[in-house]
Image (cartoon, rainbow over all chains, first blue to last red; front, side, top):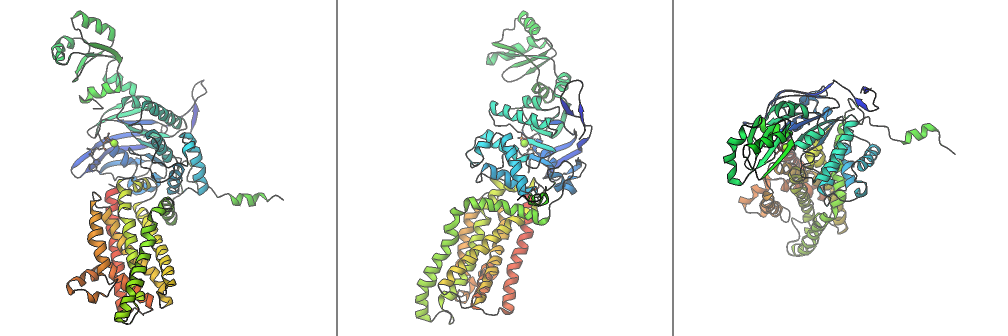
Amino acid sequence: MRWRVSGSSSSVVPVTDDVLLRARGLTKRFGTFTAVDGIDVEVRKGEAFGFLGPNGAGKSSTMRMIGCVSPVTEGELRILDMDPATDGAAIRARLGVCPQRDILDEDLSVEENLWVYGRFFGLSRSEVHQRADELLQFAQLGERRRDRVEPLSGGMKRRLTIARSLMNNPEVLLLDEPTTGLDPQARHVLWDRLFRLKREGVTLIITTHYMDEAEQLCDRLVVMDHGRIVAEGSPRALIAEHSTREVVELRFDLDDQERHVDAVSGVGERLEVLPDRLLVYVDDGDAALTSLHARGVEPLSSLVRRSTLEDVFLHLTGRTLVD
Amino acid sequence: MSAPATDRLAVTAPASGRLDTGPRPGLSQAERLGAVMGHHLVVYRRTWKGSIINRFLSPLFFLLSMGLGLGTLVDDGAGGVDGVPYLQFVVPGIIAVQAMWLSFGESTYAVFGYIRWNQMYAAMLSSPLRVTEVLGGHLAVVGVHLVVATTIFVGVASLFGAFASWWVLLTIPVGLLTGLAFAVPTFALSATLDNDNGFSLLYRFVVTPLMLFSGTFFPVEQLPAALRPIAWGTPLWHGVELSRDAATGTPPGWLGVGHLGVLLLYIGAGWVLAHRQFSRRLVS
Ligand SMILES: Nc1ncnc2c1ncn2[C@@H]1O[C@H](COP(=O)(O)OP(=O)(O)OP(=O)(O)O)[C@@H](O)[C@H]1O
Ligand SMILES: [Mg+2]
């Protein structure tokens, strides 16, 4: 890997233009149902790349094709310059896979789970033990190493699954919804660990339906819906392109909202009507509130916030990410 | 006295090269199977206590109650079975039945769970391992269990004078083949079922009748003619007959070749089906 010291700062950033994964017209069908519908994706070495989309968008189906455990129905897929159809085992030797559901052997202890998994990659006994020691530390599970997995908390199991996916020192780490079901604190611990990996040069490919996770972790992402890619770019570029700088959220009495739509719609660039609130897309939220006030719009509550990927998704699909 | 540096180097295992960036050395077939078997044996080290009663005591109970208890009656009343003392008649049957039990025990809920519940097969398949090794490795572990269990039982039974010939040692490979003739197709079944209700039916309507109607406790000739095809068409009777020939030191002849062929057929056809179902379930 080539390293370049960026500017005068001392931080070392791995710079690559090497394409690590390329998909063209990638399609997955189950019977007549199309789960992934001809997507084009390129991921570069060292990047954190995200698939953001609601339930059923086809994120996991895509991840399983990338993980070389699900044959491509149609289109082209190349990973690490190899073809999953013929070189699946050689590709998997260099991938780390953290599936959507923690699949751990609950009868075994924490460290045993790591040891046996390392052996699947042909690591020697001493390599397996050494890796497990390092990763238990990394995942903050050192004190629980001899405990059975079953009674561990959700966050601990997740960290163990991620530690396990790192046993073979992967060049690419696939994370399918890494923090779904975790409490905020556990999520932040996990994000911190993922940042570290990225700093060490591991390419991260992440799926999520949390826009904050996508914004936090991803250099670049694609927004998926119904098996298709509806937008692509960095989180900031996507927001700039598909939304305004700020958003005003207005809440009214339940049956009152309808009445105010007309009055509100003249203000700002765009208006989204959700079941429980109105979203007004504007560049200056406070100015918009003032002019709404002048029009006699008196909501129960109002909130000015900056645009997020959630707004991008809403704009592109007319639906919210998490329902 | 300090050892020369080269000696010390030789003690540390060489790096596998499989943690390096870039293309990594592939795994040999033996390493692949070894990794899968290693996993199952680690699990077994944790769970064996729970299975000990079924695995080792049940056959022993049958040996005591049938071989010694019922055997006394049979020998006194009828002079054994075709002149063979009942204990020597029934113990080879129990060897085959034990193999069947053990195989069902290892290839129903265990396999279903690895597919559905903890999804360990999927975890294996996200490494360089492939369906062939995931399936083959698990079956190999079942094979190890069969050999160990049969050997122990033969050892225990010989203390009771259950055998007439050293050829009895051949019952160990016979137990292995009989067990696999059940295990391999059952792996295929377990990978096909959508829920685990089918297993209780399997135990009730397959395992128990086969145990009773396969010439284990009495020759199949005593069965009503209509029931005999059950024995001929399923693996257990063939295993029982082979086991009995071995235990009594009877040269098997063409009939023995036929028995062996049936067992191998079940194993071979089971493998094809199991491989297909595993691929459908796990690599779809
Ligand atoms: N093995 C399968 N057989 C049939 N349909 C499937 C299979 N796997 C996924 N699907 C369908 O494909 C669609 C996409 O599923 P997928 O799991 O890829 O979505 P996802 O984006 O990961 O959703 P989630 O956020 O819920 O995990 C869904 O409608 C799902 O029901
Ligand atoms: Mg998913």
